[in-house]
Length: 223
Figure (tube, rainbow, N blue to C red):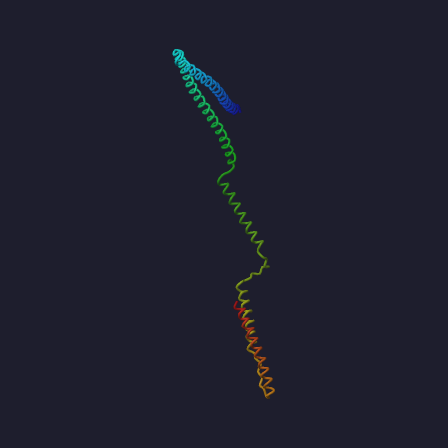
């Protein structure tokens, strides 16, 4: 337990130390920026002084130029120092970010390890096989429930089709047999001949009607 506490305490101290270092470096950078502003003003003042005495007082003008040069050299040194501090701040921030990232990644790895501790590839395969078996059983039950109940009678579609064709042929034969049965009559007198012609004409019309019906029936059966 003490080991874990010391580990967490060390992590906390590291984070606080990095934060304090960054705060101190940034404060130093602010101070250097103010120093740069002050020196820049001094350089401008010495330059003005040198210009004002360039012809009237060369000795004073040269002194102003030397002072300006000194200020410029100081500005160069401060600029280099500021650059070093900024680089250090960036390095600390980057290192701190990397450390925090590693802590987060370690927590993620531990979480995955805990999740997978009770899982194995074989166990997952076995579970998936059970799921597939149950899904197949469910489909079989659904198919059985959805099929119509025939009370144990097995129907042969081919036999039914043959029976239907036989009935159609029987109806066609009956109609053809009815068309062949034509009544005959022999006239014995002119009156009978006239009546026979009338009857023959009526029979012809009946035959035409029957033939038309027969052709219509044949066409329907052919469809």
